[in-house]
Length: 280
Image (cartoon, rainbow, N blue to C red; front, top):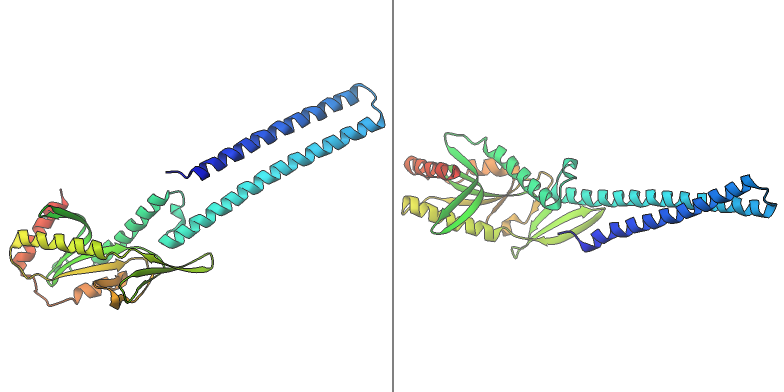
C-alpha cells in the first residue's frame, strides 16, 4: 500500500508548479502589454524605466522557478538513489534490480541465494546424492515448502537458504543479530531466527519418513546456509542447528556421519517418492 504522505507530496508539488506558471503567465502578459504601449506611443522616461524593471523581475522569477524545479528534481533523484543503494547493500543486489518494488527485491534476493545453493548442490556425486529444490512435502495433515532437500547415502539434509548481507551473529542466548554499514554508519539490530521454521521442516520430514518406511533410523541433518558471499558469521556454536557459509556446504555434506547410513533400498524408495511429489 502506498504511503499517504508520499502520494500527497507530488500533488503539492504539482499544485505549486501550476500556481507558479499562472503567476508567470500574468506577468509576461503585463510585460508584453507594456512593450506594446511603448511601441505604440512615446512613454516618458519614468514609465519606460518601470517597464524595464518589471521585465527584469519577471525574467528573474522565471529563472528561479526553473532553477528551483531542477534542484528539487535533482534532490529527489539523489534521495531515491541513496535509498536504493541502502536496499541494494542490505540485500547484496546489483543495479539491475533498481526498478523493482521492495517485495520484488526481497523475492529476487531470496531466489538468487537459492540458485547459488542449487548450483553448489549440483556438484554432489549423483551416484550417492539426489537433490530436490523448492519441494513441498506433506504428511499427517501438515505440509512445508523446503528450499533444498538432499538424500544421500550418509543421511538426509534439509537446507534452508538465507541471502542477507552483513555480519550475522548468534548470541549466547541463541538470538540472531545483523550488523551492517549504511551510509558510513555501523548499525546492529535483531533479526528473525530460522529456528521455528527449521523445527517445522524437521517434524514434517520425520512424519513423511514414518509413513513411507515405518520404523527407521535414518539420520536427518538440518542446515541453514548463508548464501551471500559478502556476509560474515559469528557465534555459530550458540545455534542449536548447523549454520554454514555456502562455500562450506558440500564439504559438510560429503563428510557427514557414516557412509551407508541409509540402505540402498530405503534410499531408492525415498528418492522415488520425492520425485513423484516434485512433479505434482
